[in-house]
Length: 102
Image (cartoon, rainbow, N blue to C red; front, side, top):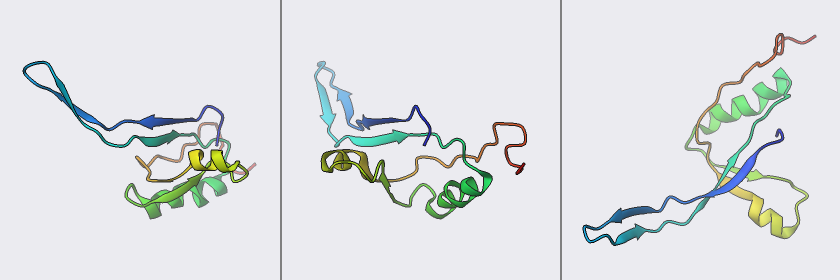
């Protein structure tokens, strides 16, 4: 995981405003959302874990994300959770010859 990732709560609560101006809510529990980049992977690492995981899970399969196995009990509860991939991403080769072993 590269520096600059983010963990946040996403509220999917719907709202509708009545003709009189009152707002009504269909409250849903907030969910955690994690956005990370996986940079500096060797081609073998990229094709073994992220690429294959996307093939197996798609967007409907579940994975258990653990931010840091050495977390304290409190942090483990906050930063480990059951998740789905929101979208499938390409394996990128951002540098010249990055996919070719030297």
